[in-house]
Every structure is written in C-alpha cells, then in structure tokens.
Length: 116
Length: 115
Image (cartoon, rainbow over all chains, first blue to last red):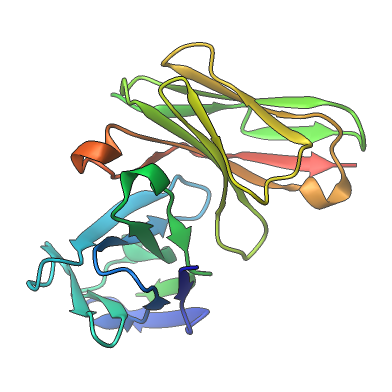
C-alpha cells in the first residue's frame, strides 16, 4: 500500500522569504502522480501543483516549484517570495497511474504560517 | 463560476439520528468523491462515483452510504452517526481520470458535529 509522509507538522516563514515543505512517499509503482494541495483556514482545498512521475523535469507554477527525486521518493514544495495569502495547511498527495484507483492518498499536512 | 457546492456548511446531529450531507457541482465532471477529514488528520476517501458506478473503499464503515441521482448531485448518508463520525466531510470532483484529467476540485466541506 502507498503511504505519504509529511514530517513537518508546522512551519513558519517571513513574508518575501522562501520556504520548503518536505514530503516523502512509499510505493512500488513506477508511474504515478504527485500533488500539493493547499487548504486555507475555513476555505476549500485547491491544487497548487502536480507532477507526473514519468517526467524528469520538476513542475513549476509561478512562485511554487517542486523538487522531485524519484529514486529517493521525495517530493518537496518550494514557495518563493512568500505572501500572507500563502498561510494554509499544505497536503502532499499520491495518486496511482491506474485510473481504476483514482483516489488521492494524502499526507498528514504541514501548517504554514507566513508572518509580515 | 463553475464550482463544487456543499450544503450545509455546518451540521449538528444527535447520536444515532440519520443525517444527509449534500454536494452539487456545476463543472459537469464525471467523478464525484467523498472524503472524511478528522481534526488535524489527512482527508481519507470514503467512496466515489465514476458516472453511475459506485466505488466503495474497503475500510469504509457500512454506516456510510452514498447516492448520486444525476451528474450534478451526490449525497452522503450517515445512517446512525456515532461520536467518532464527527469530522469535516469534503466533496470533490474530477473530469476524467482515465484521460489524465485527474485534478480534483474540492468543495468547502461540511463540518459535522454529533451530540
């Protein structure tokens, strides 16, 4: 069974600084998807970034980028130029490439606080 | 705006009293999911519908049922809520995972309190 581990329950960063959130996962599959989702306080969860395991290039979305290390089964999220609106719970998630099991397996989350 | 809507946002029920949570979507997505998220824990998938096909997770208690009368609506029924069922319930949709369109769009959630 796949598992996702986020070892940092809480992180804080000052506005305009850079922060990296860690995620490791365990799977025996070769093809899969990895996601970072953001859940702001009292608001709905939204997708931040997605990575296909068969792609070597790290995904980037504006200020958000990932460091995907397939051999190490590591998938960290880097937030550059942090903004107050980045304050949220961040979940790393795994999805099998087999569409018949298209469920997200989430880590326990990292609560990020951005300070002025 | 196209979106996923959950009603009510907050639901209080009594121990053992059946309760129904509602989810609707204007995205016309094929798949609808129900997740349970307990305090400070990761969301956990209960079941999902791929069109009309129901897919139950192996460890979802029988106390939880779901209905999808049409593409737009999906309901979560808890037949006899226990104190341990108090949680945030998240509804999500995706267009077509088989076609690689597997981003899941989440509703704001319904927070269930069991007294």
